[in-house]
Image 1 (cartoon, rainbow, N blue to C red):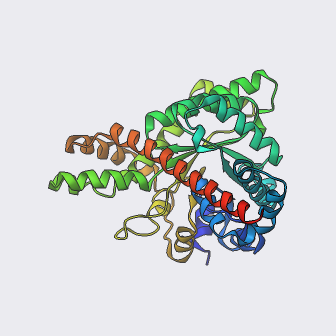
Image 2: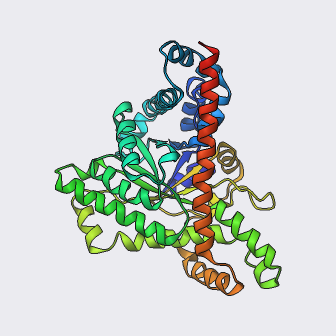
Length: 368
């Protein structure tokens, strides 16, 4: 008997944990999840670090050292978070080696305050990458319009990138193009393309939350029949776009030169509606070559009772197209939805970043 998480791995899904803290690293919790729950990577974001720093016990010694050195909060956050990510990279090094760089990855995000600042994003991405010195790190860059040029420049410098906050198919297409343009730059610079990896984080549950709210407000039987279906349909069409784009001659030529495809990553996979199955955004998005990053609660639920039935994406692509035709007919503007979700996503991370800075500022003051 194999576990559901082992079955997911066998189906070609890379399981990454959407959480990191100093306590998880030092207690052995992260190493245990690698061993027992088939976890092969970690993602972080400002909200995750804000929560981790709220429990300051694990960070007390480093905060004390930073306070005595007179470090300001911004730099303290940089030092604290890069240490956590670098430590996690060391834990995942065997996975990284075994999977030839596809997994064993740990993501760290540029400051969300730079989401609309291309030069600032590029500069911080390079600083994060060089500070950690870990080839299995991924630098997270948001898929804002300003982020697209930053993705190209950072990939072009040979740095591996996790593109985050993708909600729409149009923006996802632009993200892939930005990645391919970056590979072209790297190739022209003589960088070994096989050393560059990237994932594109396509958000799932947030799409359902917003669209379901609009469908419920419409109140028609037609609208209600579409509830809780948008997240899966949107992600399935993203997978179709991924497959189709990397078969194009330009992309195929780069792959032939040693480049890696930019894998789709399913993010925001914790179910927010208690009436839905708690593994919906895991077992409903199975296909070879994808990543699913899960909060610990979702990971444990999947391990306990997830039912893995093989590919649950490609058999449903035609019905996903039909769903969006029905959604438009019901009166929901998907472009308006995804634009709103991008704005809210950036704003939420900025709020979390502010909370993180406030927490660290208070901790520094307490040690001075």
